[in-house]
Amino acid sequence: MVLNVAIIGSGFAGLGAAIRLQETKVDNIAIFERASDLGGTWRDNAYPGCRCDVASNLYSFSFAPNPRWTNTFSYQPEIWRYLDDVAPRHKLRPLIKFEHDVTHVEFDSVAQLWSITTTQGLYFARTVVLATGGLAEPRVPEIPGIDTFAGPLMHTARWDPSVTLSDKRVAVIGTGASAVQTIPRVAGQVAHLDVFQRTPSWILPHLGHPVRERTKRLFATLPLLQRMNRIYGYWKRELLVLGFVKDPSRMTRAETIARDHLTRQIDDPDLRERLAPSYRLGCKRVLLSNDYYPALARDNVELVTTSIQCVEPQGVRTTDGVLHECDVLIAATGFFVTDNPMGKKVRGTNGATLAEAWRGDMSNYKGTMFPGFPNLFMLSGPNTSLGHSSIIFMLESQLNYAVKAIRVALQRNARVEPTEVAAEQWTSALQEKLPGTVWGTGCASWYLNEHGKNTTIWPDFTFKFRHQTRHFEVRDHVVSN
Ligand code: NAP
Image (cartoon, rainbow, N blue to C red):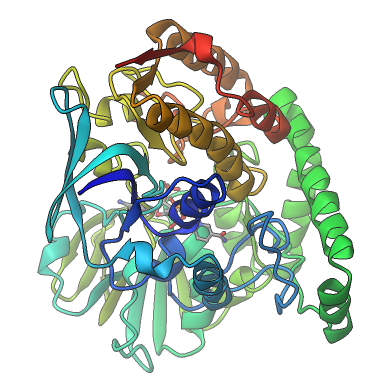
């Protein structure tokens, strides 16, 4: 049977796509999921302390508010449970083909169909929604000798709860978003912890707190109140665009708050100096934590800022010749984002793969479609990620456009793809804007591809993206049979 829509991935993006398609009466949908349960990045990132740094009232579907969030900024188990709760309410579980790892997605120009090769067989679909996300493939760094390490080595996104940390010597490589959340949890249970920092992060105080029972009851009985809370949170974050995008020098105020936070929490002047970033706040992801600095100040924790030379069976050797012995090695080293392996698995009509789009060699349309890839829609595509607000808002905006385009493709039994001109205009307009933003102020970050081009971030107010994705603009597309 030929599917109307094949959705790849069952995280926020994949589930959101299925819900919106069903609402518009598109049927015959399947969701391909490589794991045995749904949830995407919120299933996989189960390391201790994992938490969202966007408030839950905003980091949730607009059509599925949750009055029961127990914290204003929820922890991973609760976000995963939220998705697990949304799925049956929209009868999505029967659509999901679990343990179907997609290995190839290729357009057959004769049959005018996409073929989807999975580990459990071949499928065909008239349209495809790639909902695999930017933070799906953990990056274990290619440090010489890392595969010779004698003890357990785990990436934060592949946490193995059976690995005992109690009373062990543990090393964490990386000091990004995942590291600052898990280090405070790990530090208290281990005999010794080495934290290998390459670049210090800007860290602001975390304002998250438990939600009072009274507030939950109010949100449940008066949904409008929760909606107003969401709207307030949304606009407060939109104001940050003034600093991130319009005038990065405005970030000095936040830098002062972050410096004060560091000074208040770290007494040792040497440690404080090694933790002080020297790039503009916002250039790399801004982190929130109240317990990371205190964890580093513990007697059993050492911050190592000398570069790593190699990993040996007994531990990590730094370039000063010191071997930092450890029993367990944790890689909090991020993901393949601009070089997401999924990109190499998707091949369009001219033989090109989506990897070329991520390399910045191919233009895209609204971060969602690509010339030469008819009827294929990528959620969390190029330049749709954010440094300041909720990615769920961006996903829902992409879906406004994608669902309309899918309906055109299905109703007219047509191939829909953006024109080269429209895609080029969209891409070049963004690329012209990006160097003047905070992300272009000269730091190394995962927002940039191998050529230093930012193919990740949306450099504007999110309401502009919402406005630009509200319609299917026929003139920007080739619709052919
Ligand atoms: P990340 O922010 O990319 O951090 C990776 C860390 O590993 C950086 O400190 C990096 O140093 C370091 N690193 C990488 N390769 C290294 C090497 N070979 N040697 C030494 N250090 C190395 O990754 P992440 O912490 O997993 O977070 C990724 C993204 O996931 C975040 O930015 C965020 O968007 C999302 N996330 C969000 C939350 C949340 O909502 N709170 C939580 C976790 C993750 P450099 O800085 O020098 O490159």
